[in-house]
Image: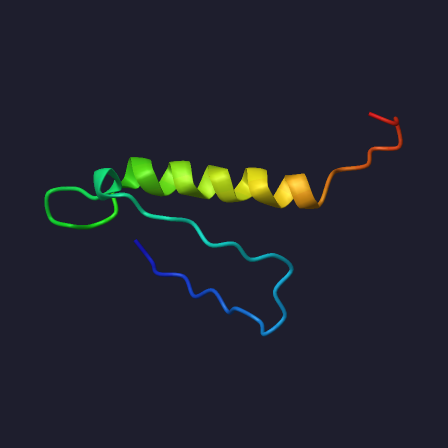
Length: 59
């Protein structure tokens, strides 16, 4: 599989801090994929709580 490179700019739109629990780590003390997906989704929720979508429908 070919690698990809992601360039991060100095200007961030959103940042947050999340706690990683001991239960999020696997036996090798690495963040498990399932925990990573859960934390990513939690970040997504935090972002949209602060930046609500406005679809013009007034919802």
